[in-house]
Image 1 (tube, one colour):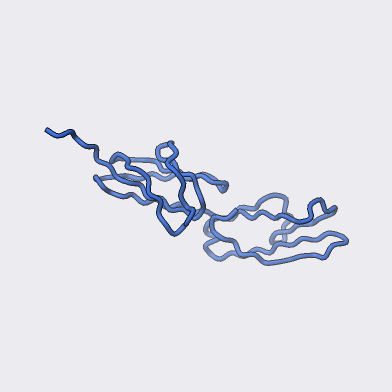
Image 2 (cartoon, rainbow, N blue to C red):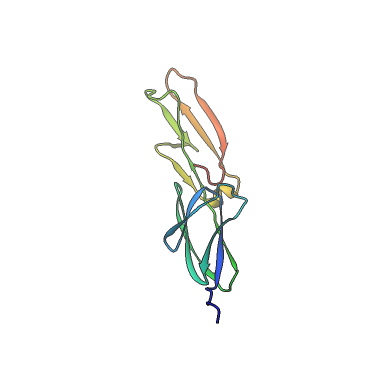
Length: 144
């Protein structure tokens, strides 16, 4: 009698941001470096698995089920965007930063839905003795 072989499948991951992928809490590799392609991980035993993705935008987890030998389970992670405003030169006294009319004090996170809808935001910078600057910027998926 030949040795029995375990039934296995692969987990394919696609992400709109570069992420570290875990499967059942163990780091499996990276995905999302090219958001249009699938990164392949495994093989993993047939059964239930928890696939995680983490990056500067947060952590997400999704459950997948491999139900037959040779199966590929696909998992997609969609991220929003983080707007960070940096002004040069630094240390300008009385600098005022505004994002969509609100005072800017730290990075602003936008949801995947806002990014998908083509959301644009107005960023403004002004300070006494300096020329004011204002521009509308488009949010892009998975950028921070």
